[in-house]
Image (cartoon, each protein chain N blue to C red):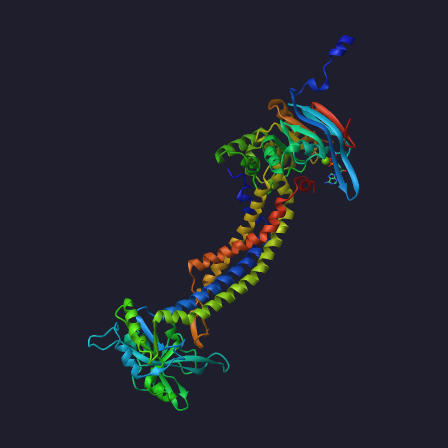
Length: 392
Length: 245
Ligand SMILES: Nc1ncnc2c1ncn2[C@@H]1O[C@H](COP(=O)(O)OP(=O)(O)OP(=O)(O)O)[C@@H](O)[C@H]1O
Ligand SMILES: [Mg+2]
């Protein structure tokens, strides 16, 4: 036997004080909403970035560069890398892979007055769809290799001036790119790029004979070590091989940690207000019901039973608020969000990604706010002197 | 009366007034003092008070306002502790017990009836009566049965699903009495149980207390200002300025 005050006493007491209960629960709901949303955003960023890469694809950049953007190596090394052991070959014995060049262009963002934002443009060889099997044209047609045609990722389409089928924009003065198609790439960050012909891009920027990175499909994920060994063997060439998914995970880390930290900070800041709200509500409840508490103590319920009863009441109040906040945050998963990736300085669009873990921990955080805010009121309730409470 | 008869005359405590069956002492207070301090001012509410109450007795405690009646009742009920003296109630030395021990002891030994009823407004009559049984080892079904039986004793079994605000003052007080007897305590303490009731309802409550004393052999200690209530008791005591007259 627990010798506890029945929980229905707390549930019904909350229902009796509808207005204060709802107001307090909403405060907690807001905090849980903020927390859950930012965790969902961080999760969405991670998922978008990580899904760009595959474990059975090798990505080679210059040793010491953190990103493709800052990397560069000679075109002749592409053939060397593609000849390394473990690289998958097609029916004709041609290795599946290629060298790419990555640059960033500032384009006019639509729907803003003259705001400019960075867009990543990838110069790709003709066989790009072969070594990026999750990419496919969903509208228009593929770009003709060796021309100034380009395809735009679904995440960027229509969001910048010139980035839609039939439109064009200037890479540099008199160096236009014509958009002829739209591609999807499994919701990954590749969808936030423009893919153009590698030579057209190199000519426009005077970077003939150079590539930023070399991508190679491997026969299996287990072949990576052999591939890497061969690629990094020649210290003179100075190349570094990574699994493609590991590379993109690293690219997303900074941003997702930043979002998580910012969201947690804001939530913690808000939660102070919500906890004070819960505390005020519970103090009011304790003083309103001091006669009831005194009676319970007279009847023989222990101080601990009273303490637990009011802590439970605060917890219940907060968990209900937390549930409301969590359910509201699920609504955010229908919202697309676009922001700068601080590692690559590139606009990427994300989804808020709801997971059971995120929702569960946000609700638990709400309940915790109730317990913390309700603690001192519950202690006061437990200290109620039955005689003076019933005299009043 | 002859001199012989006078010598053999039984004392008050042994015979009572013939209502309840007076038994061995169940409440024994010796040299009880209760002092409050208001700043530097010392207030002796009870002074060197001795009191013995026999098991099965129905006691009425009267006296002017502020004379210490409630204070005395709270000491007997184990809600408060004396500043000096010893209190033995139903075999327990109350001054020697911790706060927690006294709470447990109250739950099993004392039934409370308050002037202002003090029911839980969000609980039904049945749930209110069941409340003290949550401090026993009884299962849910047995608790419900006993709570219903107690409501039957006070004639409110048809109101068990009503909330306090749906009941009259007299009915609320009857629910309180049901709650006081549901654990079958030895002693019932009542602080002005008819104070908020009209004559008719007051009489009904007094009839119930009478019944508890006579049929169920409960020892009852009742503080009252109502002379009609005091008449029902087997023993009337007057408190004045912290001393029994
Ligand atoms: N906690 C306390 N602190 C200080 N004085 C107190 C305290 N409790 C009671 N008193 C005082 O003790 C005295 C006796 O109080 P008590 O409540 O026992 O009187 P009572 O006989 O029950 O009066 P009433 O008939 O009005 O209920 C009063 O003067 C009261 O003011
Ligand atoms: Mg009093």
